[in-house]
Image (cartoon, rainbow, N blue to C red; front, side, top):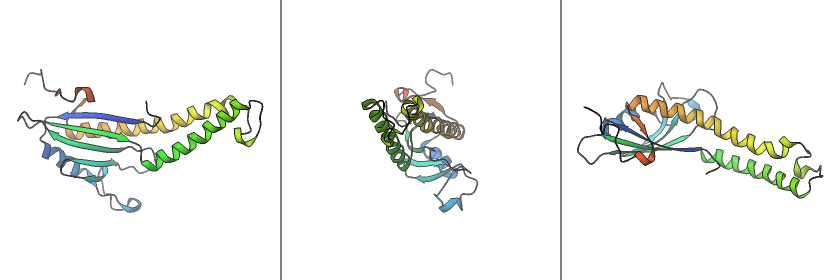
Length: 182
């Protein structure tokens, strides 16, 4: 299990590969400086011939917005059905900050375990349970909960735009319409 939140989803849709990229493109603006020029689109980022790197446009500050990297692949069975394979992860600066913060608090925990009666700055100057043990848990939740909320919002919008069905990575080969009556 990774410390930082991460999500891998697969969306299967009946739309053609080109149409999927067009839909994502119509709802994605270029990254804008300080929020100017974003218009009314839902995502910002860039698209390639077979994928994208986007994140949600929001009107508030949130360093935990996931970066969505996706590839769009048509199936080889000639049915013009498409698989969108998406990886969601925190931005690199947020992960660096989180790593440094967690390392600092874990070092305080170790210092407290080595010298339990100490009240020095190295262990936070506190014998409280929260200061030593609760802070790493708090930091983990601080990174995880906002990420999950933002990832769910982005995922739901993509499902809505693409009229797709969510599949797990293990179900990547199985298409949502297999076994369904046409």
